[in-house]
Amino acid sequence: MIAGIFFGFAFGAGGIAAAALGASADITSIEHVFWLCSFLPLAGLFTVFLPDM
Image (cartoon, rainbow, N blue to C red; front, side, top):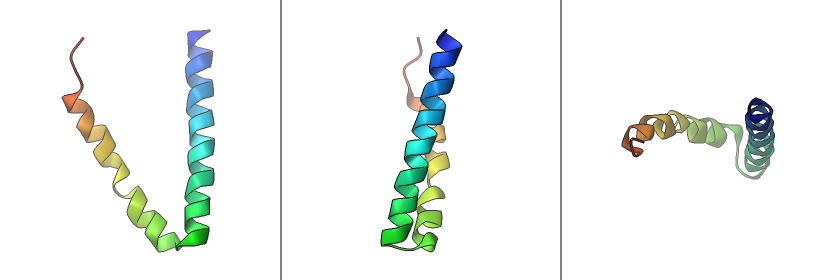
């Protein structure tokens, strides 16, 4: 059940993010969206600063 919740959340968040990036590409340009997406791996690097449980 927990795995289903996580997969559902991941696919739902991905769908919402894809729609948001598409809307952003319509407003600005696809180059701007590519530039914006190039900074997304930094979010993964910042997980080093999460508290250790």
